[in-house]
Amino acid sequence: MRPSRDFLASRPALAVITPLDFGRGPDDDDLQRKPVPFGGQPAPREDLPYRVELWDEGKQSVEQVLAVTANGSIGYAAYYAATREYPDRYITLRHKGSVVSRWNGPDH
Image (cartoon, rainbow, N blue to C red):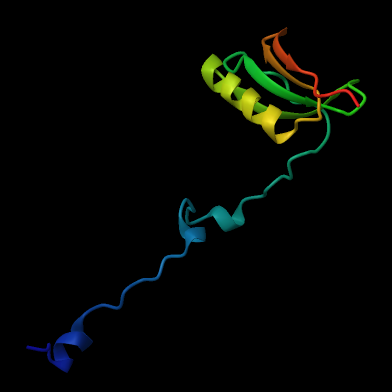
């Protein structure tokens, strides 16, 4: 049996929610948003002591921090993945200030 037209007309319309609507409060559009500055290295966090670092081609400075984690196993997994993603680059896994492992890449 099909519902009557009167029944369908009396029902409220469904609201369409887009992914952008999640997490927004009623006054979020009025907030002043400050851009995040680029450049420089953020201060290392003590609660995330493991870092996977990708060095520049001259092995002079860290070009990019690929992973930061609190867990040594996750840090090593990220380090291993980085050695596969960047086989020709110098990569280090650090715990706080100490280098735990390094990948020098092949010399050409």
